[in-house]
Length: 515
Ligand code: NAI
Ligand code: MG
Image (cartoon, rainbow, N blue to C red; front, top):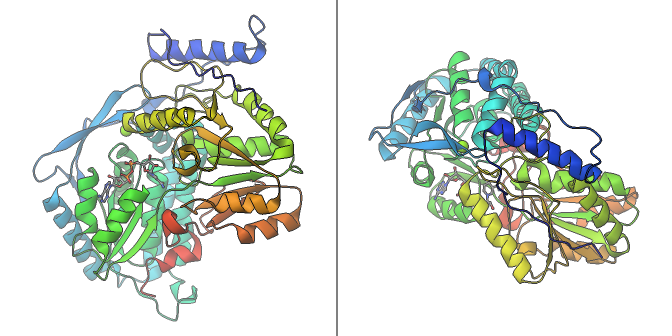
């Protein structure tokens, strides 16, 4: 079946400034697409200006409405993963800071927030939402700098969706009595929220907006590799006049997160991240009366039937696994394709992948940005080696990787069997494992053969098949003839090792109400 020529090319001697690198890369990309010596036209570099953001050399913790250094003065660096350039030193919160933040959140809860009418709380949420829209460019550039994701994604997905979440939950704040949870559902108290690095601002919005709408106060712990947009959001909270202590932002690593979730003053814990840490948190919270929601990993099946429109399905496959470098918990990382069309689907997919543009995240034409951290790059590299060792065939398009920074080419494994680690474990990178099936029943069995259960995709012309299959898939979200669609009104969450509880929509309110 698929042409299994492995042509993954690691960085070749291409030095110089970023601009030189990206120009050279543009040239090579279009030449490669057209064939040697036959380049049709070139993409000119189209970098978004980074002048729109002013990054401070140092950032403090946001506690009780003001920024201050950590009690013990510890800091850590956050870097731009596309260049390895340090962006800023950020305070690392210790136990004393966690205690101060939880105390600030408790005071704000008791004295201001829980008794404020929902219609008044809504005004703050609307203000935050509007500020996010007004400062959208600044947020998008900062997100791409700190995270490595392409600007077209931060600009068109992350930031607009973050604003949409605040707008959506602002609308609920004065309607909680009509949300179907009884006549007078109350808040839980102080929420301790720990988020990952793949969608830094968006995950902050997913956590804060429903919590605040429901009348809780928050202590948010962003991931250590991507703290900057959460800190800018803290500044927006100040600008919006949010009462001090209603939102607190504690930067730091896993130890800060662990101290937060086990603090006795926290009533509700919400976590998005790895299944491993999710289990640790579940153990830390067990036996307390803290309410817990966990949004963990996934290994989603993206299922393509022989009657699916091939080009559309290919776009859906690309979006499913190469969006955000595959750093997506609901990524369609297992392609299940019906055997009779497997060759053509893989062939068209490879052709499409050869046109993707990898490089400078701030370039508006970039499709694939940087891997978020050295650690994540090592994990992806390691698992793809395992894939080869276990006998799957590896393929990448010709692709020049920038010399500095953390990069991984789009990669497709064919000949994957269900027992391979690359078919079972979350790689969390731009790596697709292709498996085949013959009958719809076999598709169901293979799709459900996973310890996870977060999402799935179905590509078929038949509505009846979509409905039949969606009922049988053990996944929290099932997309039909589309993939990675998000809407604040729609609940999101998983089964099994993907966690429990739902975020988004009316369901997302329940996690923050005493119901
Ligand atoms: P992680 O789960 O360690 O990090 C997520 C967040 O949890 C970060 O803010 C981190 O500081 C915090 N944290 C770490 N240890 C903690 C603890 N003991 N208690 C409380 N908070 C803690 O994820 P990591 O190490 O960055 O990535 C490892 C793998 O996890 C990835 O390769 C990927 O497979 C998966 N992952 C899944 C995500 C998802 O959205 N489902 C997001 C991030 C990672
Ligand atoms: Mg960073």
